[in-house]
Length: 177
Image (tube, rainbow, N blue to C red):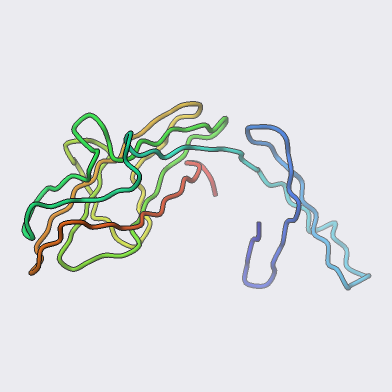
């Protein structure tokens, strides 16, 4: 883990702890190559948070894909999603901190508009693009869950019967700095 600032860089190596939760750790800087450096003013307490989650697709679905009927199809759901089953179900295994969940797409196409929401009626949906966007908020610790629903609207000059994109996602604790 590195923290970069305008004038200094602190590198933390071999950060290990065996507690599934969060704890405060005191870090003291060392300046290698300078025997007169005094690290007593360069000690910080940092909070380290252990967490984990799963982001699963519906049963028998290996990746997110859309199969529009025409090159002008609207509100096309990805295969495996329906009003009850989201295309992605996120489950928290975090111990101490709730987290937010972010997602982005690797590429956009001018004739395909993909959107996502955290409910099946696509209320307050967001357009997917190459910038990470927060889609799930404050997922509770220890088996909190959230679902992501998607749809695509097509306005292409040639038919697009099968689209396959790469989706990147990550979780970040809600109250983290």
